[in-house]
Image (cartoon, rainbow, N blue to C red; front, top):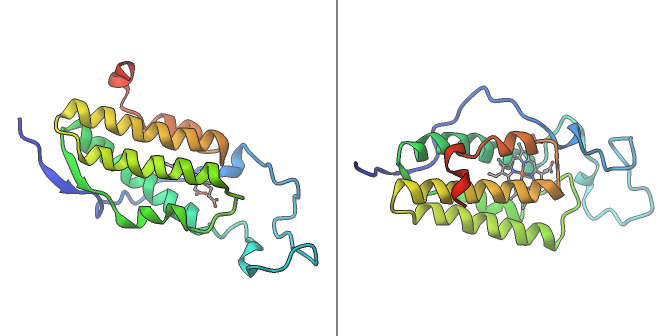
Length: 166
Ligand code: HEC
């Protein structure tokens, strides 16, 4: 059996659909989507007034992570270990979000990047699968705190037959 090294990316699945956070967790007390931060807060950024139809930077990044990790799942199952992952994923720390993020988010984001990198260090298919599942667990951990809408879909991303091992 040979392990092909490859770069993740480039192979976007076009027609995936998205589950937005709001589906389940509508924890913004204010129903009005565009809560104009009247005089209450200094208008640090105008973009805070979010259009519901306009996904945030972070949401777009997440969609790309979702798509590409599904492609990665298939590759991992074939024993193909990626050599790297898209660099823009590092922007998870800085991308603008519709949610209020804090240190908890940062910690989990770091863990996510670390787990992603661990996949590239796997040397067997089994290690690859374990590392992949660990990485998906980090998606899930963060999504139990923030943005619970996609959680069910995220859990389905795991490679099932190997789950018992961890
Ligand atoms: C460190 C926390 C964190 C991690 C790790 C994380 N997410 Fe997210 N995710 C978020 C937050 C916060 C949002 C909401 C972004 C927004 O709307 O501004 C989000 C949004 C999403 C969305 C909805 C995007 C939309 O269309 O509105 C999907 C799908 C998603 N994430 C999938 C994933 C997947 C798949 C992974 C792992 C590969 C992952 N997430 C890892 C925090 C995280």
